[in-house]
Figure 1 (cartoon, rainbow, N blue to C red):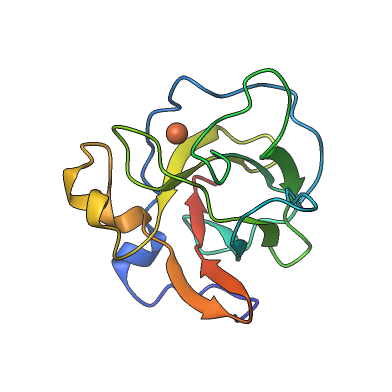
Figure 2: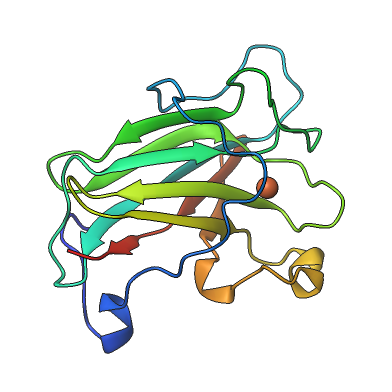
Length: 166
Ligand code: FE
């Protein structure tokens, strides 16, 4: 991934689409960029990319809060399993080490995310996996929020760049 965003087209500088927070957000998540647990049956997933502004500048120190279902498709609504927040680096890059979330009834596979540039507005959205049969049946699914997912040794890696209002 290049450190500077390529705003080659008009679409590259459009803000990332917002989506519903859903019912399972928990505030005050721990600061961490690794949600993995020892011994759990799961497929490792690395999610990485950039946060940049609508004027195509990388956003350092952007807050990213992620929460998602565990491998069994369940949210931890009492504690902070599969929840955490972290920040972009000086080049606007982020990297989360987690697992592929399981699916739960009524939804396709997804991650929930909040992104906030320093002193900016909070973008609440969701990220999706390509080639999921349930994508076409999910009324919240948005194709522009599909990550670029590829196989990596022992797991999956996914890339997504967020565009936030400067
Ligand atoms: Fe959800």
